[in-house]
Amino acid sequence: MNKTVIAAVAAILVGMNVYTLYKFRSYRHDATTMLQANKSAIDERGTLSMQMPLNYSNIGTSIADVVACDTAGNNVRLGDALRHRTLVCRISDTYCSSCNNYLIDVFRTLKEPDNERIIFLASCEQRRFYRKYVSQFGIEKFQVYFVEEDMLNADEIGFPYFFVVAADGRIELCYIPAETTPQLDVQNLSQMYNTMIKAMK
Image (tube, rainbow, N blue to C red):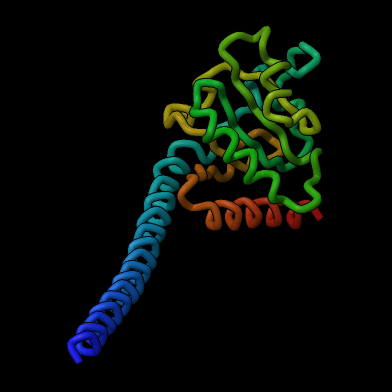
């Protein structure tokens, strides 16, 4: 009799523990989902809030007279390299390497990109390492130009970014991506690119 009672009590205790563990995991999952959703919303607002001052300080400024260096070592006036509206990716070895990699990965989401309408402006602390720097990021198939640091107001932010520039060299729109908002970044890049391409047709 005592053994039966003990077994029943033990079974009840085990059942209560299992149920408690189940409820704990359920609550933890719900709480984690809620926190992630809130964090995603906060990150998205944070990313978007950076765009107003960024664009205010850059839209309308011109990069036409900036002298850059191509991968062959030739000096090129960017105004001469811009034949039409172009999507520009700005990276530098002074920026966080994971940020540079993230931005380039975002660019790789573009389907069938028109490489003539995309250029990379890269900065490298030592110009003699420039080609190695381009190879390191695997962007040789794009038009890549070396430019000095602080070429634009946006360079002061210290993060890689991309922007649309008109054929006359005027900046039309800038965008700083953030690793916390990948879906937003891909969406904005694709929208900017597709709008730019449609405008050329």
